Image (cartoon, rainbow, N blue to C red; front, side, top):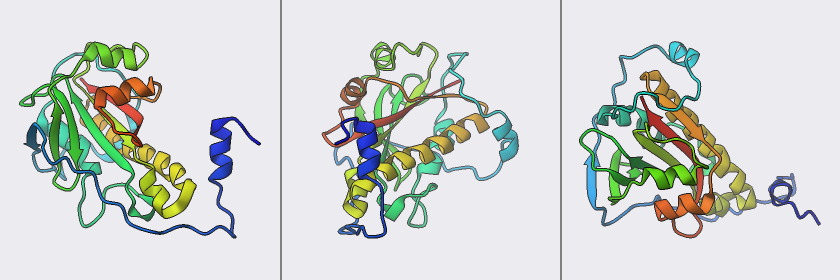
Length: 228
């Protein structure tokens, strides 16, 4: 029996013609009933800014260098690919299970209190969950990645049980793919506005989960460092 967890995962999640998918239920999206604050975001601008391929030519991971704040308009553009519109979102999700959650850790954002926010895709809003945004603790959680000039962190998490309800253990694979889709789009949206963005995939999982206050069954996926 394979004991390596990574290899075991891929072996158990392989799909064969004789396998049947559960397809039992469609899960509900996560909603916080009592946030500390609710922050509406400005409408998305469908025009303006550099063309897509010009943005792609500058697409490379960079840590913030200037240390200045982000604006709410910056955040609105970055988060818009994750927003719900016309019954879906801006990235594919197997079975429309959407096992992805997104959190913003605001250090320096104009008009926004520092703290941890949950992104609510249905209304394109941020719900404040905590008034604490400890840059040092986050730096330590990211293996001492320098965050002194970061304005915010966009943290993508996975709730793979949503996909598992439809596809069995293969749903864990789909959850990982979805984090990749969403991170790539947010990364492109940030760079397209001339911002610095750095996807941190290596971190202490329990530390990140503790800083976000994640419940059991929800796991950190990628931390996108944002700034100028």
